Image (cartoon, rainbow, N blue to C red; front, side, top):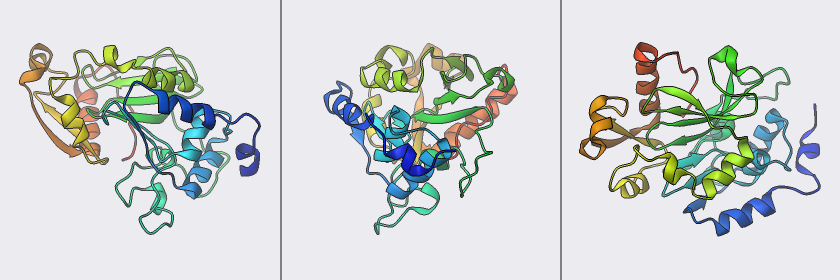
Length: 253
């Protein structure tokens, strides 16, 4: 196991290039302030270095808000309003929770701990979940190969393989890949609704996104802002009842 300095003090860190890509992105991108201590805690548990995009996000950001806030990419979590560390990588001042909190990292470094099936790395406003496959995704009922991003789709209640790793996924997000990806999942006026959300909230859609009614007329659905945990919980419950498989862990928010 590598010590924290071995993970942070590296040649060719990813952050300078990633920061330049963020600044030049055609997609609206907001970099949230980071909690340094929580970021280092997450990096130590992940055992990835600052050469990786994942390590750079955890170490240098409190997360990313992309595409008018529609997509949230998890990083090192929000610093507390008084300048101290937010409790458990939380969001005391309204920021995003840390990658460690979302994935329930142990409080103290544990070299034997690993995510059960995958690492949740992002959510979208309607409860879609982006997760990075672990070493045996098939055992958890997930598609794709180890190290590949999968997406829990709220309109099908199933996981989909995206055929890309984490760094390629971030590049895809920042290059505008979501425009086609979310065709059929976004309605007229979605930008304004996403921008008005608190970072603890998502959008609940009724009739539900997986219903025939929503598929036929998404613009005619009723929508409101609710806690994101409620959006994820409802989708998980219905997936267990009517979906092909139990979706498993969708992230703790």
